[in-house]
Length: 350
Ligand code: MRU
Image (cartoon, rainbow, N blue to C red; front, side, top):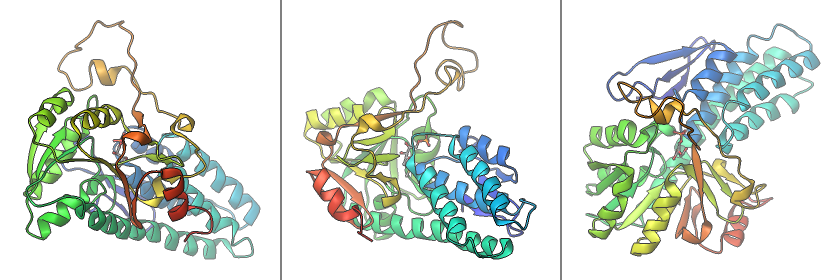
């Protein structure tokens, strides 16, 4: 099933509402800037690459609503929409990366007519999705080279097809291995507070016939101690130049546990998630979300005193020293990351 696509009339973006999964598969049609902003902010579409793809399609849709033939006016309104969508979620760099690509199309065609620019924008957003699909496939192949048939893999949050375009990143090697007749035992952290692991990862793997066991986040240590985990595979939302990697809250704790038990911890992500302009993880803005996600969202009634203070960071940064490898579509970067990432993705590297 396709999680994000451009409606055939080009006037809306269609997404699967990921907040309703796994019990209800409902598609939403997003035709306005507010629809798009809300869908991203509320995690109806989520996962770093999928957010970028949705925003790119969204910019094409919104560009089509700008009623002017004047280039400067068009660019001004285009940038207003871009800034608005960009403010929906701060941590995943794929959002601004995709929006910048779309803006670049407009600024590099200042001599073209608005209808011509719309044609270029349509091609660009379709390319962004297709390239993501190809990157996920390559990441899956590199990731699969790190594990063997029968291994136990622990993952956190959801970095599967729903979060990307196809295969996913952290889950990609597991889907690819399954296609090749391999069997893995996957342990999926439920991923409090929004339960992406329980609702999405266990669903995607189960649907594909991959052996998956759902655990609460605080059970990762015992399954590692039991000897059931041979590798940890997680996705990422932004990778700094030194290899520090932001991902769903709780990821850094998994990495610390993995180090304790001597289990390799791998981060899998496309080049669109690598931000060499961020020197270290300290430069990554961490999204803070509503206390209600902790206190009441998935409970029948509130599970904490009404006025209690909550701290709800949506992401944390895993220190590069805990990461055994960063698996990208171009290959596997190994420490020291400042060198390996720059060699693979630095300026002038295509
Ligand atoms: O808040 P979310 O659900 O968008 O967070 C998603 C993650 O942290 C994923 O692991 C990350 O975006 C990688 S998706 C390939």
